[in-house]
Amino acid sequence: MEKHEAFLCPFCGAPYRELIPAGTVQVRCHYCGATVLVPPRLGGLLQLCPNHPESLALGICTDCGRSFCADCLFIFTYGQRGYLGYLHVCSDCIKKRRENQKIGLIAVSILTFLWGFFIMGTGASRAQAGLGVIVGLVIILAFHALSIIAYSHSSKRFKRLPTVRIVMEKVSELNKRAEEVKAAMSPQEVEDLYRRLLIPDPHTGKVEYSKIDQLLKKYMQSGLSRKEAILKMASEEELEIKPGLHIPPTISDALSELKKEMKKVESAKEEIKISEKAGELYEQLLYAYTAVYGGGRQALEREIKSLMEQGFSREEAIYNLAEKERLIEKV
Image (tube, rainbow, N blue to C red; front, side, top):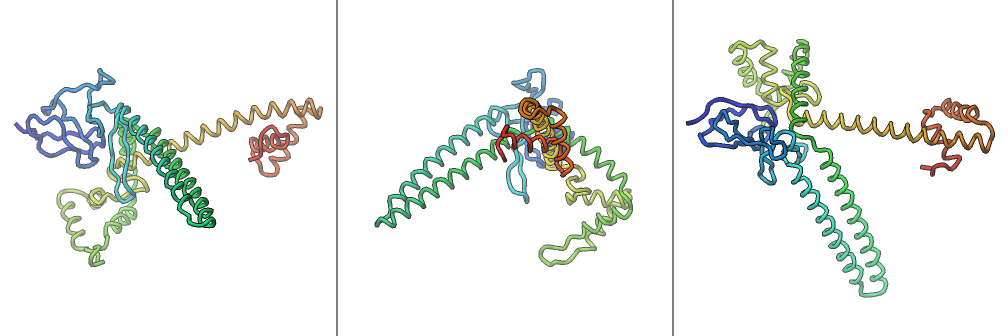
């Protein structure tokens, strides 16, 4: 027996509309590429998450093939700007990927050192040998530095991977925002969106007005208003209605939004660290001004105020004075 009911992909929210043959336990979402477990109500098996037995498993780890809930699968992106793919990886497999990177870094370092030493020893004359040593050392240092930078960048990516649940919550939030944007669009904004649909044919360079207008007319005849029809066409062409916001929002939109939020959090944490460090330096400066100069808090505040009048923030003024008193090294 085949199931005809559509269900939503737990990873991206897109409906899976194809027929599901009886006995099928997993399908692949054509929108985000995730391997999704078929719900029990549609003939799939009831599977529980191994980490959270109270939760149903929703999807499968790309690497190990085990089933997990939305809190135990992390979304990992790959590809270039023109095309982005998504992998759904469990925490154990993320650790394995990180360990494999370490092994790769060690292997690259060893090969680089061997190559560099080989170049050092290939000089026939003393001058050539000296040049070989220089070139070999440059190669060793350059490749080693690049390997460390690449490993560091990749390690940060692994640490910042969001779970499927976090991404889906963000997609839901963006959906509400998209509905608000759609409702608030002026007639002029709708027409601007329509003009963006008039993309020239890549082969002929001509805009197929008749094809676009025919599709617009078809949607309007089905009962949609001009605005609704244009928005539907924009959705099919995956056009942004606002920078970073599609109709419906994509996983890329959600990941981009989460990345911005992460930067804000990190920036706030950094500001707190700077503020805390400035507080510690202030106490040290206060001790120095009291014990050495005898001026105490009044003299210190006078120096800080003088620097702030020159355009420094209070924290920058404290750091500046701490450098002068050699409490910290100059940066």
